[in-house]
Amino acid sequence: MQNKFLGIWIIGASGSVATSVVAGAELLAQRLIEPIGLITEIPEFSEIIFVPFTQMVFGGHEVRPRTSKESFRELSEELHINHQLIERVCPYLDAFQKNIRLGTTIGCGKGVEEAVGGTSQLDTLPLPEIVHQMEKDITDFKKLNHLEQVVVLNLASTEPPIKLGVHTETIKGFEESIRNNHKEVVRASCLYAYVAFRCGCPYINFTPSAGASIPALLEMAKQRNLSHAGQDGKTGETLIKAVLGSMFKYRALKILSWQGYNILGNMDGKVLTDPETLQSKLIAKNTVLPQVLGYKPHTHIGIDYVPSLGEWKVAWDFIHFEGFLGTKMSMQFIWQGCDSMLAVPLVLDLIRLVELSARRKESGALGHLGLFFKQPLGTPPSTHPSDGCWVGDLHHQWHHLESYLEQVKKTSYKE
Ligand SMILES: NC(=O)c1ccc[n+]([C@@H]2O[C@H](COP(=O)([O-])OP(=O)(O)OC[C@H]3O[C@@H](n4cnc5c(N)ncnc54)[C@H](O)[C@@H]3O)[C@@H](O)[C@H]2O)c1
Image (cartoon, rainbow, N blue to C red; front, side, top):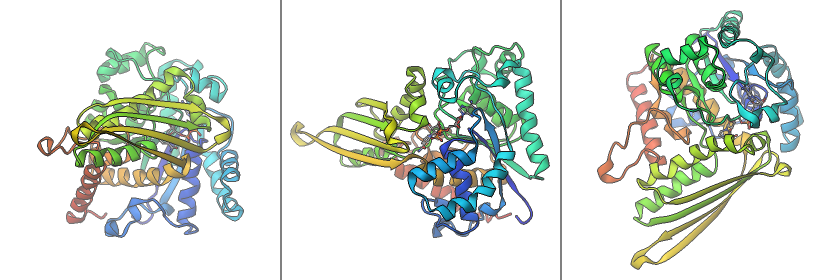
């Protein structure tokens, strides 16, 4: 791996998670912090060569004028991060800033437009030119930095769900909508995924936006032998749901209702105040329980924006269940997490695991990465339906990843 560099092209480059990922990778590269929360750093997988943090170069698309350094400073103040650490990463955030280009807000909806202060200037161009420009941004980044491989990573604000039609079904239909400048049917996340595949890049979707999940782009990834992973990182309340749901299943206790209320105060929360955009998050969050339990109990998910909370998100969940002789019982939990700090280790692991898949020439949706996502792509339907092992079960997902990595060790694919 010596003298090779991995480029990471981040969509939503000045966001909280994006800037924390870039700063975190640099602090890890300089060995100034511990790799807490990273699966790729645990002793069990130490024989596998994952791309070192010292070999990562970052660039990306953004639609707000604010710089990544401004975002990171604001976040660091809120989280009381050590000043010396902040100063150590500032030069790297400046270098990152030089690699940031203007992105598109086509199809992002009111939630994003209000949060980012309008639509992108790039959107005044016809779709084929927007695609061409974004493709050029990535290829220039690759050339200028002499990169062997670039991974595209979606960390942009959530968009409303995409309406399905001929433009989502086949590559031909999707490309026709671009050629005919049908801006009303496409979504920015799909355009970014399309551009990633055209540039020969694997793609990670950490958001609930459609990205590469539409049939047209699933097909395109396979045709071009490119891998991708998604969607919507499983970092907080939904992670606990995946574990607790398994507990109820393993004890054959029937869940009657699961009510979950979330409050958060950052820009991600602000974007979700738009009812259409909120639907994308609700769909992702609602995927987990039926995939863990094998049935769908009554559920409700509430998400409210509470500005004073900033990066801190709080979830209160009430679970009503039935025990022996039909006795009704309940459990409740409260989860309080720091949004970006929960996300960063997952994103860094995903970058390394997707880069590994590219070295191994894997293609299509990477089902073994279901552990990381609320709405996992590419996981086969239940492998053991008879013994009730469902794809959303966190243990099942962990074993899937573990057996994949055991296989990597056996084939001793190192370089
Ligand atoms: N724990 C977590 O933080 C977590 C967990 C799961 C999913 N996510 C998802 O990750 C994403 C990022 O979260 P965040 O907290 O960093 O949000 P954020 O609001 O801080 O950052 C989003 C960034 O994307 C930019 N952006 C918006 N639309 C864009 C577009 N079309 N093209 C380019 N840039 C665009 C915004 O200007 C902003 O800088 C969100 O979609 C969120 O739902 C986060």
